[in-house]
Every structure is written in structure tokens, then in C-alpha cells.
Length: 604
Image (cartoon, rainbow, N blue to C red; front, side, top):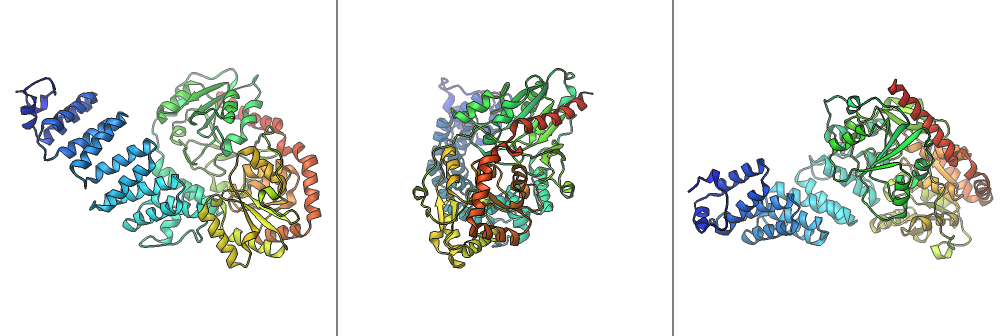
């Protein structure tokens, strides 16, 4: 009989059951690991299957679990599910198997089944570390399902068990922002105010504070914890010398119906093809969306990076001979910042996706303008500024617009002043919401039209209105709709009230394109100066204020003087679209001039 180390399972061998019975699980695990190291995963799976069928029963559930992990890694999910189910049938308290079974169900699009497995872990006597794992899985998936109160409760339980989980703190803080659960920073258990602050993600920090120091610290922490630092020489140095047209590469997973994907079509389309070749490096999920089709058609070359590891993706960029790589995502959801660490292009620029510093060592430049990037902000940015002469933001002049709805169909009063703020609810802060309630209190009969992002946020806002003596019917909530219908809504509003410190970006562009003026407050950070930049470029700089008191005062004055607001609307209707803000050919030429200068500098 062959030794256990040399054993190769053979289901046709009649002596196999006796052989299996003589093997311990340790023997099987060791042999399976050797087979895996030799690249023979199929033989390793067969080894476990043989031992499960004919080996001793005592630890059969562990072998089923190991088999499930191998099958799951090979994307043989149906077989993996059967293996995990067998494991929990043999040992109902086997938490590891239930955790993995839940992940399989999630991957298969069965969220309720996944949640049920993780709840089962918590209902049984699992070790603390596995209970934490189950709570975190619940919180993550419930957040994805937009069941925010349940998600927050799950993450709270996890943090009560172990407060030293920065990634869990990060999600907990942002969940509270999404629900307008104020104050956002509320210590509990052993979790301190400092841990909440230092665990805040960059995106959440941009919503919480305009302090550029805090934003830089949030970005730096993420990069240090999540982005590998590469010791190798920059990839672009090993490529042939560049010549011919300058190659611009756009890097993104958001080239679809996303804020960035809605802004950039004309940027791609208007590039001068005599001077520039336009590449896209993209991991956006494939779809038949007209927006995605238009974006793909606007690129000279599209390289799909879905399923491609970061190192290979960077090599594809380097081999394409890209002169200027433009990162459209930064540290936002779904980003792949490690690609930039390889330095596949000699010039790497951050633009649009992250309005502020990313602290990424692979990004040297940040597209901006003099308004969003004043000199005093430079020490808080790891990138150097490329300042465009008019406005940092491109937009799309071909936005599809639906017919204008009636105010009545939107639940709005016909004869009252209508303020609006269609920004995402996580951008709302108690300070700004309190200002909005004071504004409503000073402008008789006025209403505030808001996006109904989720029911918890809606109810929390209504409770705040109650506390400040504002009748609930003066807050009107609009459901999410398709982009053309959303744009048409702006015509029913009189004045947009911007958020702070996370200003509107795409939403501000949409409002001004539709002829709706905006009152904004500009702060100390790039992101808190975005709407002010747009107002400067459109010719209405007086609508950008520098303090909360001035913001309130201006919004109240305009609410009491509808004729003045009507004059702003006439100006936008007559001159807004011909202003520098929407002169896309000029903005693209300005961008190209900077990219050409930097590219030629590196070509020598």
C-alpha cells in the first residue's frame, strides 16, 4: 500500500475504502496542500471527496469545509454549497462553514439566505472572533441592501466586541451620515471620540469637516493601510521612448450612470484627435446603458480591466505607451489605487472623482482652478496643482432633459418660494440643516424640496424640523428618478441651497445648466469650494458666501425677493450656457495644453 504522502485517490480501486480508513485528517490535509502547491487542485478535491465518502466519520465536517473552500475558489459554487451544507448538517455549530456558506449565497444573489447563515452563527456558541466576522458581514450586506438601521445596529454590536476595527468604524460613521443620524460622532462602549474621528473615511471626512488637515490625515491613513508601496522602478521607464500623438489614458470604474460618467462624455469626444489619442482603462460593469455606449464610443481604445489584477493592469497601461494617465476615481468606492502605485505613465493626474488630495504616492498632479485650489491649500495636498484658467469642471451640453413637470405633480405649492437641495443625504450636516430650518422660518410659506434618499434620513430630518418649530409639510421629499426627469425638476425650484462642507459638484452643474441659481458657502478645502468655482465661471460670484451667517442672510434675502431670483434665472437662461462654465471646447483645450506641456517635458 502506498504511503499517505504519496497517495493518489482512485475511486475505481476496490481497496480504496480500507486505504481511506487508515488515513487521518492531518494526512489528507497535508497531501491536499502538496497537490495544491503542485497546481493540481482537482486531485486535492478528489482526495477530500474520497476521504469524506470512506474515511472515519469523526472529523468529516472539517473535510467538507476544506473541500468547500477549494470548490469555492474554483468558482464551482453549486458543489461548494453542497459541501458546506454537508458540513453544517454534520456539525450544526460549525461557524466557519456557515460564514462561508453565507458568502456563497451572497455571490449567488441570495441575500436573505446569506443573512440567515450569519445570524445562525450568532445564535450559536461561536468564538468571539467569528461572531465579529458574522456581525461585520451582516452590516456590510445590510448596508448594500440599503437597510441602514439594521446595518448600523450590526456594526455597533461588532464594535462593542472589539472597538479596534478601523474599517468597521469607517462604515459605522458613514452609515450615520447617510441616515442624517446626528450627531454623527457618538461614542459608545469602549469606542472613543478619537477612534471615531481617526476611523472616518476620506469621503465621510469631506462631508464632516472642511479642515484640510483632517482630510489629508484621512487620505494618508487609507493609503498607509490599504495601498501597497512598490520598491520596483516605475513601469514606464522600461518602455520604448514615446513618440507621435500624445496618448491620454482615463482610468475609472465609473464610466456609466454615475456623477463622473455624466460629466465626462464631451471631454472624451472633444479631444483634438490630430494631437491626442484617447484611451480608456475601465472596470465598469458591462451594460447596455446608452450613457455607457456613448462613453465607450468616445474613446479611441478601450481596455477592460475587470478580472485583471492591479500589476497586470498597470503593465497594460505602460505597454500602451500612455503619456498622461488621468485617474477619475481617487479613493472613492470601487477605486483601484494600487494601479497608480506602479507608475505606468510618466504623468499621473487626479481629476473629478475625488475633489481633494488622495495622498497616493503614484499621483503627482491634481486638476483644479484658482478658486478650488487657493495657494493656502497647497501644503495640505500631496499633488501639485494644474490650475485651469476658468473652471476645473467639465460637463455635458448634451444632457437629455424630460418635459418640465408641474409643481402640483411634484407635491409643491404653486405660489410659494421653493428652495431645493438634491444632494445626497450623507452630505447634510446638522449645522447646515439647522440653517435651512432658520431660512424657512424667515421666509413665510417657503418650502424645502429634498431628495428622499432613505426613510430613516427622512424621518430624522422631520424630527429636526419639529425641534425647530418648522411644520413637517414645509419639507417636500422627492423620490429618485432617471437623469432626464431629475434635470427637469430644477425648473420647478426657485433657488438651490448648497451643502457644506461637501459642496455640490455634478448637481451644481445640473442646476446652473437648467437655469436654477445656487447659494453656496465656500470653505477651506477643495470640495467645499466646488460650487463657488462654478458660480464664478457662470458669472454669478455674488452667490458664493464665506460664512454660515452670510449664507443664511443671502438665502433669506433672495427668498423674500423673488423678483431678484427671477432676474438670476433670466440671466442663466440667456447667458449661462454661453458662459465660460459651459464652454466645453475651451475647457478641453485648456486641459490639453497642460497635458501636452507635461507629456512633452517627460519625452525630453
